[in-house]
Image (cartoon, rainbow, N blue to C red):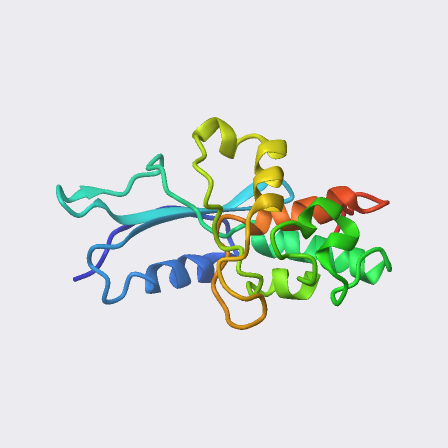
Amino acid sequence: MSIAIDGTVAPGFERVADAFASGFAGRPGMGASLAIRVDGNYVAQLWGGTADTRTGRPWRQDTPGVIFSCTKGVMSLLVARLVEQGLLDYDAPVARYWPEFAQAGKAAITVREALSHRAGLLAIEQDLGVDDLCTWQTMVAALAAQRPLFKPDSGYAYHPLTHGWLTGKWCAASPAGCPGRI
């Protein structure tokens, strides 16, 4: 069964459409969209597949989607720029840049451990509401107070909800702030 792909690609970007379509192979219930801009202009706007497998509703151009982890790479690059500029050290304790972080057994956690999802800070145990999740100070205070959920550097557990506040706090604490360009 072939999945119908809708949308457009600019001349020279046909391989993007081919790669997008190939991602549906063997996944009849999948749905997705892709938009790529170059110099502010769309070179690809594609969508296809199924938005709701219960009803069979197709994926459309305006179907909302959930995006996870798209900023982790960007934030990690900004941290790398701070390291490159000598403003941050991967092997230094996070608390050097963020003194409040040293609470609850976290004084020795290094930047490297936190960046590599080895800090035991994959979640915050405090009850938080939507307004809390959208308030910078509330979240960095909760993360500073949070105890590691496992012994830091003893294992790996993806930090899906805390990575942005960890890296963002280092950037904010840096003497230069986050580098504006990568």
